[in-house]
Amino acid sequence: MKERNSSWGNVAKWYDRKVKMKGHFFHENSILPRITELISNLNVETLVDLGSGQGILERTINQNIRYVGLEISPELITQARKMSRSKSPQFVLEDLGKPLRKSYEKFDVAASILALQNIENYEVFFRNASQLVKKGGHLILALNHPYYRIPRSSGWEIFPGNKKQVRWVSSYLKVQKIPIVMTPGERSHSKKQITWSFHVPLSIYITQLTKNGFIVTEMQEVASPKESVGKNAKRENIAREEIPLFMILVAKKVI
Ligand SMILES: C[S@@+](CC[C@H](N)C(=O)[O-])C[C@H]1O[C@@H](n2cnc3c(N)ncnc32)[C@H](O)[C@@H]1O
Image (tube, rainbow, N blue to C red; front, side, top):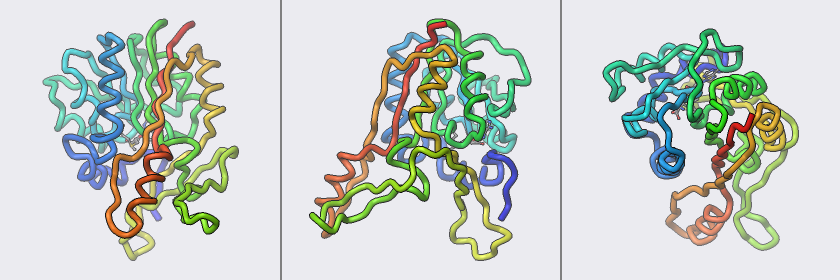
């Protein structure tokens, strides 16, 4: 299996096809409408996107906001520049798990859309975020739900006792580094592409925010808007409405 660091450069073409111009299903239906609403309530002039991928957030936000995207994959930066709505898009190569290579202005908002859990060194990520946000500014994190959506350690199941659909979680408090095969159909082992996911419990994220001068001002738990059809639809839909799969945290920089 091919692996480099936590970059998604090895799956850039696949990811770009999945996200396209408007985002994948959960971008469009769960995450981006909430992020745009949060941003519009915060009176934002400048925004830095942490782990900007192929630039979905840049294309989504109000074009009057001055935007900088930081990303480890040159392949995804190339895609982002091609699709940008701006004439002079600012996408910069940075490994957010290491101290920043350049010095940047301080931004009103740093946003990270489904990227923090792909970055191994979360402590450095939070230090970088703190360095990039001005006092009184905000950090917005869109996450896979840290408790309910842990790759390989959570899933749906029918509970034998009452036949309800439940969400099982088998491992939560430990930090985990989890390989995800992005090309499951590929037969040849050597051609399988993986990305890395890093599970970190919520308590560590909150501690990191506090250590780096942030206090949480809002938390949203977001259920999947998908709907089942067929004979198990009722119990599947009930479970899906009740168990959130995403979390959005908003934290204010107070120091
Ligand atoms: C799931 S993708 C999300 C991308 C984008 N925010 C979106 O919503 O489409 C995760 C992104 O994090 C980037 N990434 C992984 N490790 C990184 C690091 N150490 N520094 C910066 N970006 C990183 C990957 O290359 C990938 O673009």
